[in-house]
Length: 102
Length: 178
Image 1 (cartoon, rainbow over the protein chains, first blue to last red):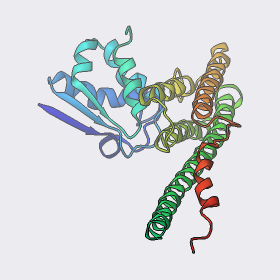
Image 2 (image 1 turned 180 degrees about the vertical axis):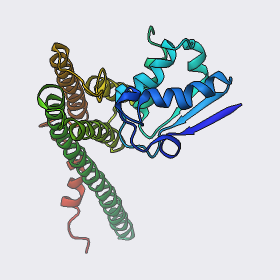
Image 3 (image 1 turned 180 degrees about the horizontal axis):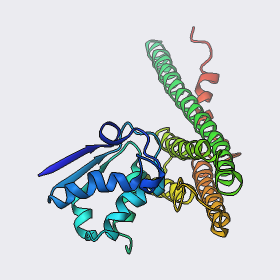
């Protein structure tokens, strides 16, 4: 089973901040509300960043790197998460957070 | 006399062929010159954006007050995004930038400029902030150096290509056909 998360439509057009205390559109909230539940259901997840404004690395690191800190296996995440973005550097950066020892 | 007439016809054909080839060469050189000019303009734009990006990073991490940070952080993220877009445009315009290398550069730039406790409320300044800004500066320098090096490899300065001017000789000597 596959889940597609359109960040701009389902979460926010302007993701901002790292922690929930930073605001409603933070990386932590995105991870806890969208990413982690889909991954726990055993689904593959397609994260579509098209339509969002520029995203900061603190958001990306908390959203995706936080999955590793939350106990998910790196190799499993790399296999199950796909990124769609107009900027190819987003995919590269997110993969760095999903494979921190690589 | 018939032989002379045939030779004259043949000479005219040769002149026409050389002329068409000459037009093709000139047109190609004009296109190349236009492309070079376009790419040079984009690279100049990239250099200006690099300065702006570094200034924004310095402002956000080193000097901005708490009230200034939201606007500054939005501007910094947008500038990183625009920088990446411009690199891809330079690639599309014909520069042989490696796609993956370019993406790695932008990922590095983004993580230096907007990583760590970027956009974290109540962020306190630390010594690491200066290192972060320095990393932004160094990454920008590396990118600009590589882009300029590739540009000058593709369009070396001061080399004039005379080889095609030999085609002008038949045109100059074709003379009177009557």
